Amino acid sequence: MSEPVDSPSSPTFRRRSDTPFFLVMGGISACFIVLILLLLAADVVFTSPSDFIDALRKPEIQAAFRLTILSCSAAAVLSLWVATPLGYLLSRYRFPGRWLVDTLVDIPIVLPPLVLGLSLLILFHLPIFGWELEAWLRDSVGFPVTYQWPAVVLAQFSVACAFAVRTMRVTFDQIDPRAEDVARTLGCTRGQAFMQIALPQAWRGMIAATTIAWARALGEFGPILVFAGATRMRTEVLSTTVFLELSIGQLNAAVAVSLLMVAMAVVVLLILRVLGTGLNA
Amino acid sequence: MIELDNVAIHAGEFSLSGISMQVPRGHYAVLMGRTGRGKTTILESICGLRKVSSGRILIDGVDVTTWLPGDRQIGYVPQDLALFPTLTVAQHLAFALRLRKRPQSEIDDRIAQLAGVLGIKALLGRSVDALSGGESQRVALGRALSFRPAVLLLDEPLSALDESTRAEMHALLKRVKESTGVTTLHVTHSNEEAEVLADQRFELHEGVLREV
Image 1: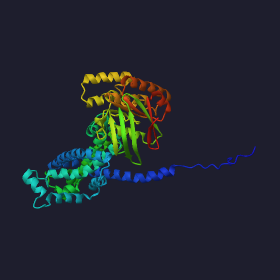
Image 2 (image 1 turned 90 degrees about the vertical axis):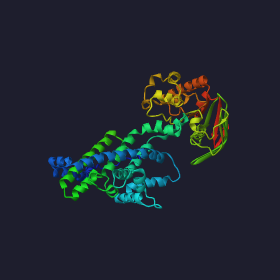
Image 3 (image 1 turned 90 degrees about the horizontal axis):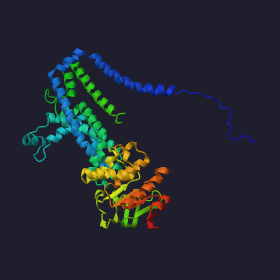
Image 4 (image 1 turned 45 degrees about the vertical axis):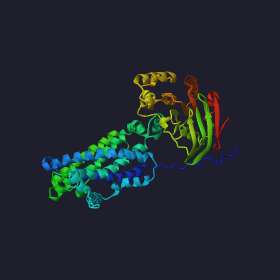
């Protein structure tokens, strides 16, 4: 009997280790994690509980907190209302000009915030044959927008909605459209299939979209400053508070408000985690 | 009765044209052909999920070519079943009847009757994500039959089932055929299924549909 061609030659054993892999990957990752932790720790160390409470007792800051909660919630709910149909259309249909809509939706995400605010300001004050949107809203409708609270909501909505649309689109992309097709053969119109089959499956995504929109609205600053101004007790939200307190040298108050916003952001992230939407994982 | 009159369908990479067939009322027709030759496309066109580029589709003599799927009264069981993840088994059976605003007592009677025929009484309260392949198949079949459609379309209903479940489903489909008399078009590539069930056999070969 002859030797098989592939007979194993005497093997040289070499034991290797995965440790360098974990050291390199972990080391690089840790840099970023440590940076974030240090940022938060520095804020906490800088302020004392009494400073924090003093800052939160200021009527201006309390007003800003109230306006922030209300305007963010309004912007988030508005965003969901717009993002659900838009996300569904983008996910389900190939219509002419879809690529254009898809690109336009992303513009508020990539636009520099100040530019967005400036664009809003110009839109509301651009004279079109002697007619002006802001003047018409103020005089005929009795609902002035610029430098008022509606401007805060609109500025927040413009950016928050773009993120909500992305979220809802991913949500509907992950839902099998075949069930809606079958629902249509069973007697549904497209509208009924959307309401009875697609929407009930999308609830997690809808909560995620609302939460993400809310968090984006919370962090909004540039467009609000330009379009709504930073009038204390009127159009001041927490992000503008930080800016205003800094500009009058009240570093303690600025840091206290920053910590408050960190806490609010953490709550929002926790909600996303608990829902386990997979969008944050 | 299902009637296709010189139907042409363009669907992405392939197109079918000159498709004509007639399945008389109450007949059980089996449509055979190799995978990827457009059998599913034909079913989707009949139930209205896919537009035809020319020709006519008639259900019981009525031209439904341009009708919405929901107006055609066709029960459709797709290959992937596409059960509704948020509904229970009973809600699947009730779905089409609720849309038609039938009284609750009638819906309850129909659910009980269907569950009896299909052997899924014990599953009625269950959600669909925990069902086995054969159980899911029965629910999809019940959902399609619930509103007593004029026509039933089955897309390879037994291909994903194991041998013994398949035999059970053969018997079940025969019972349905005898008890409801619904005009059926059943897509498969199994000769065995065709032999057990068919009154009439069609074959789709190289884009040509002919009766054998």
